[in-house]
Length: 190
Image (cartoon, one colour):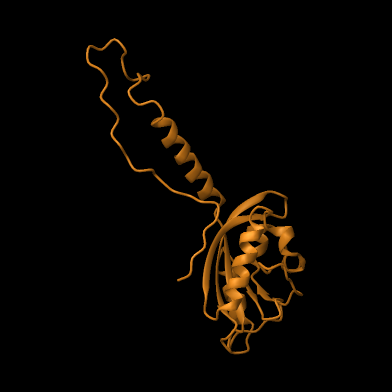
């Protein structure tokens, strides 16, 4: 899957590593729980790790035959396309993006994609990207934000543990930092 909407034939089975062996790619694909994929200059996917099936529910063949608009949430697609174009324009550029991708079962997953343009490197000649499911992390962050906002929504009001007949008024709540900050998408270059 290219962030700019291009895809190519599945070639993960015959992809070779820098030394010409397929063992290098096989080890890479089976030892991690992130999806690794490499795009060549023609935007074809030269490699996708077998973990795509576990993480996103697609076989490597299904994944590489899909186009970006089918995979990326419509609200996130303009940002993803802009990042892909900027990434391709600068050798060595890196990016990080948080967006929603469709799982094979139809639900949307929050994912973090990290990539680097190595098109100029003779041993790689591609854009190397990793994709990680962060849906549970997003759910927990949103839950913490909700709890923080409801806990500080009514300072000074009696609660189930505060007696309203006490002769001393309740002490004001102490300020605290927000437990987390999230955004629907972020991008940065390192």
